Image (cartoon, rainbow, N blue to C red):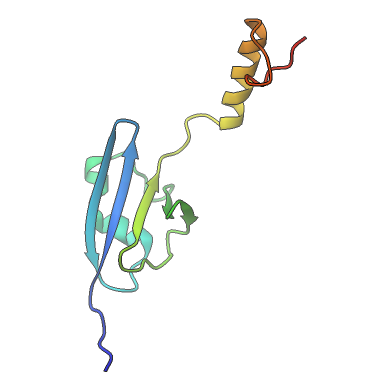
Amino acid sequence: MSHEVDHITVDVVYALPKQQKIISVTVSPETSAIEVLKQSGMQTFFPEIDYDEVKLGVFSNLIKPDRVMEAGERLEIYRPLIADPKDVRRRRAEKAVQEGRANKTTGGKIK
């Protein structure tokens, strides 16, 4: 005996450095990630979320906005990086060289 599931629950998560919000959303099966996000109302709390540019994930894996969500999954909303991590490391290493504290740990080349 099989019966159709008419609703599933998905958690939508958005985290800032000092704040995190989790909203549980009940949707019909076959609902895409972007639709779950829209139905969550998360943008009400965080207007900076741009549906056209947002990066989404499940279990720390990037997914496409049209991916169908499954019951019990957690939809993660990723904030855009403010700075490229490689640039940040490079600047940190250059500063270490200038301050004379470059070594294997800081990554700066000792001149």
